[in-house]
Length: 479
Image 1 (cartoon, rainbow, N blue to C red):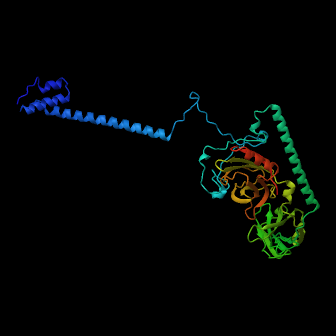
Image 2: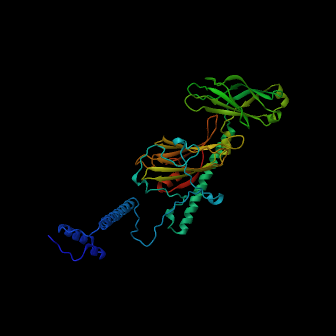
Image 3: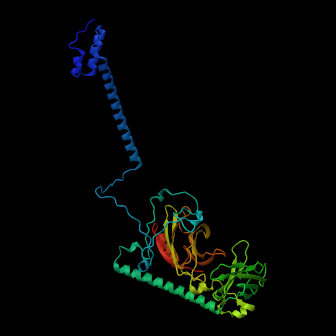
């Protein structure tokens, strides 16, 4: 069977006909037992060209599909916010303001809140970064992301009066200032009454008997604690105490000793000698003996009965070389605190009802009493969350060394019992003086709650009436 061809295969090739026509011509020649005119290189070129074309089409299709799928994924993960009412206006993000001290206008700049880790979690030890719930539960309300505290200072005048006339605002401010002045006058009168009571009726805590002897050759000072008499009973059941005496040399505080504990007595007899070496005669006149009389308690902190301060500057050196017997009255440890005042504490609160959270920021303290003979103290603050007058959570700040005006700037978050509000909730603040050896001594106390009374209760009511708002106030520390 013979098929006539109009032109050879090479002509189709030069005319750049489609490959399908060339293949049909070649097949006709094979079917007609004609020798194909297509050469082997031409056939290989056709196959390679077709393969390359198909591969490029497949690669382009795969690239477009992957690019489209990646765009869909990014849109799902990062949705673009849309403006429903005002598409032409750019979206404004509100920046939270810093919590300021009420006296920042006269003293310095704004006091910024510094997030720090809690010492009770892994002791944010005196220092840290962020805080978690003191109760330990990780439950979060779904609305906690949307509900945040707007940091800002709020005085007794709230933003609810911004739309009222200026005359009413002035009258309101004057009335509030008069109330604050009256409350401060009452507190000052109470403090004066306490001081008068202390002067008229000094409490008697007994006497301390001791002996002193100085050896100039060995440069040693021997202190013999003989006995105590007429100590007050600390155990109400037995009408007695378990007293012991601690002694340290000031101002270095390097030499610290203590006697043994004598059980169930108010007239303990020790007769214990303590020798301190390396004390030059020049150092002797600048040395002060500090005795602290305590009552041992097996199950709680030891009770401080009182203290005795004996400066050696007024002691005759010749009598001291022989032996000098002395008897001193034991004075209350907190007597100087009452005369100096306990200072003030600046606290900021923010309540988030939807998230059941109460944020407490301990900003700073001022005018704390001088707890050591260098005129300084090592303060820190303990915070207790109380529910129905029972402590359910505890936090504390870092220790600020050698200062009577510490700046803490530490924030804590407390989880409030679910759907309870702040009706049965209160906060207790304890400012303590840290000591490496003896028990930490309480400088002052502050309670904020619905039944605290005075400026503290007013601050608490402001926090309850203005949720999601950071409100800071100064408070006087009490006994």
